[in-house]
Image (cartoon, each protein chain N blue to C red):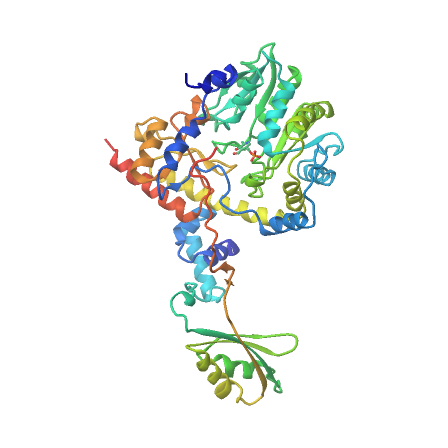
Length: 391
Length: 160
Ligand SMILES: Cc1ncc(COP(=O)(O)O)c(C=O)c1O
């Protein structure tokens, strides 16, 4: 009898839907010379001073475990940064947890908060992990759709209509992946009021907060009464082009952070010290390099949005993150058809909108974390593609 | 906007005014006018390709020459600098602080070529007191660009 490994995989894992991105990735990975606007990470490499400083401390022997919470120096720097930038500070001794990317922070936050049967509001389209983490924690994700007519912003009313006695938390993520939408302060205030009224926790993934191109980012934890109610997640991957270092953090009420720390100490022990050292350098001296990158994204953003609109892929104006999310209605195809055919015929990779939730159908995500030349060539090929398929 | 335009063109002078206008949220006319102004004021000196000559001609050599001169009354270093920078072999001339006065970059077809330029043209000029020639053996980085970037960076084609 042959050994059937699948029999041993838990039901919870079996039931987990595969990531829509994964399927598409496998297809794209087989092809050569693909121009990719499908990438969810910066095209810059980490600023050299950050690499150099981190490697220097490794060379001097800083290669050990750290406190479970992370280096105090880093927690202090994070707290100072949040205080200066958003006006919300945290006690570095018990309200800040350094994690292996926002990915880990998110998982640990949800496992800390969610008991089996609890409901968590997930606003789609969104980053692929939220729903999966809720499911793995035994919770029930309750999906709230957003739409282009409202700039892919959720409203307090949308959320209120999906609340039940079992709702424990809301996951918010603005600036948003995949839409590039940002949240306005007034709407955020109404959501904050709702959270207080209905006694909900807000898990706010603000990993793209530094990539805000018009106006300033409002951190929900900074709104009155929300500091205690918010688990604030942020990290270094996007703002400092540090995806490979795997470093992020969570801030919040000491009991919640304490709970998260419990899981973290058993499953991760601590974030890698080499990345923690890099993060300290980034917060201390990374401002200029960050601003240079943000300025470049902003220029490419204007360029891609105008070009997409010009070729008939109507695109609402994204003002955060590094994604444009055009409608592909002009093609008459589904998101997956569009992406598969575009890849096959023109060797251009973009990601189907429905990979980020059902309401992303009819859209594709185009990352502008790519060089101007790449963006320009990709859009030209998309134009050719549309012409070839015009009925 | 002027600085944004300069930064874009400094990075890549092939980007056309319409694209720059889109990137900066300005009109094409504004961008064209600003570029014209920058050209007129010589803030934009020249559009050129950054060539790595080592790739096409192994024999070309470049040297940096430290030149000590005696400054002249009324004109200081300007006149002697001009006498030097007028030579087409000279790629750049800087007035320096420190141990010598002028830093002169010279390009020639061969070592001998450069050596002979220094010996017959440069060192013999009036007011040149001494020269020290350093031949460049290899260029790693030029005008902010790493010339032989070995690392071919590969991100995943698609990632969440
Ligand atoms: C919205 C969002 N949250 C979290 C992450 C994961 O970030 P990290 O690299 O910090 O794990 C990503 C990465 O794409 C993201 O887009």
